[in-house]
Image (tube, rainbow, N blue to C red):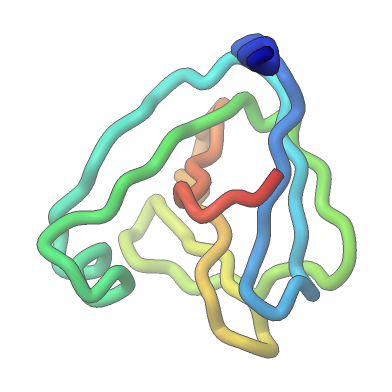
Length: 105
């Protein structure tokens, strides 16, 4: 017997490796993509990084708040201040946020 596939609006959660920064997102994923800019290459240690975005109003944080670093004039990345793993990317005037695909169930 197989488990039913989660609906596209199912809650998803993730966070950093040390689990001090945790997030839950709900809503329809709206922008799955890959990026090969120098920042993403440096963060991933690979030629590209994969992301998926969710509506900002469906984001909740638990545990520690992320620290923020501006990588572009209109974009910032959230990372854990303890283990320094990136957990979030938000662009100015955005209606959605990007989550790295390292989420856990």
